[in-house]
Image (tube, rainbow, N blue to C red; front, side, top):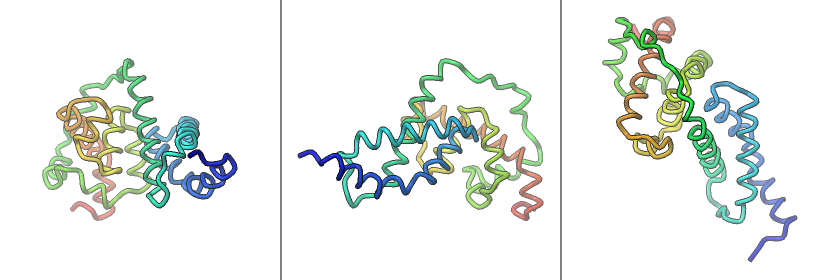
Length: 185
């Protein structure tokens, strides 16, 4: 049985629109700080959510449902752009001796759970898109390697490799900041 249009609109406004700020924050992180792209991503997410509103189960987590739509929309856009690879210079991946100890002490990148702030977000935003998506989905959104692999349509080994390289870059970029803040001695 279909919901009358006015009731559907009112329910959507009450349940979904209150999550716009959270959706924009996630879209901004996923898009590397590109505000127009993030706005487009949120707009497309809300359009898809409204069209699928009759499939939303009342009483469940609307925010999570919307974020899933946003993430899937982003991943689909990412897959379309995948044909244009992002060049990565080998020199940019060179190991930094001072970050080795940090990586060995925290091989899963969990140190970032405690120091997510503007500098960390800026460092994540500077990562090449393929690395940034893996970090956002795994470390910020808490998805498993398998879930990230499925969303990005790549093997689990590739997810691990991208996360390793992304975390090494982040550790190198943020090492002095972590020492300064007292996270690392």
